[in-house]
Image (cartoon, rainbow, N blue to C red; front, side, top):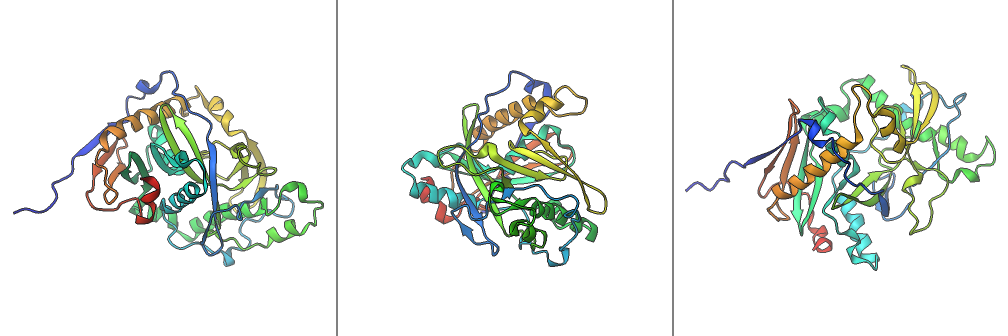
Length: 352
């Protein structure tokens, strides 16, 4: 008797033609923070804001060398795609400590970066990805799988690429402090002096967890946050609009304000530019070879409706594979039986 599992059926969601998504835009609500958490310098998880940083612009006359301190760089182990477990641990903690036990109920739970990958699929023609999804108690949990492409991309394929990766972390260190900017009284404040010589450690993270809706679907997304402008308001006021994304690239995947640091090829800061992220869709709309926010949102809404029809087997020990690869014409989904579950046993009670 053949006891092997049958070849899984592959479901395919076509990307094109894009014009079918160029209709009235689906409603997407402003994300609202429901909790937050931190990873410390040893990667220990804490259900608090201890690693929240505050924005304070760098001194371009003094703090301009992004290569400084590279020899002391501490990079976390297993620097591939982040598993969903810390996000689910935070939601477990939130349910235990909240009077509203339904606060963690959602149709789809994942990292913001994964929602971004899906949102940008209509305009992605060169970056393959693979995700894992588990259906449990009517919620789809999604995390990214490590592939040969992500291993090569995360590690950097040359010493130069690794150094350039460090530049991004370094300018975050030079642009943030441990206290609100209003507490800085002089250019010689110890906070400003300390950050210039700070050791960059990528174990340290502050993450925000927000809830939103896309059409009729409730989404929960976790996201690493670079820093905050001003102070974090007390609950229930929403701090999302005060979070800042620090970037040296042209990629934008955040609903927060974005500060762009221009650098030369030697890693020296040359200028700082502030962009209001929510204004960027209007800035690029209608321009040749640019993305359209309406198409992206309608695409994601349609894809999630289709995905909920495809992912039917509710099994905490099983998963589906969601993949996007050359020639980047469709997203494929297949069932994996008892393999690569997104959930850990400790998460099951909270989501029953």
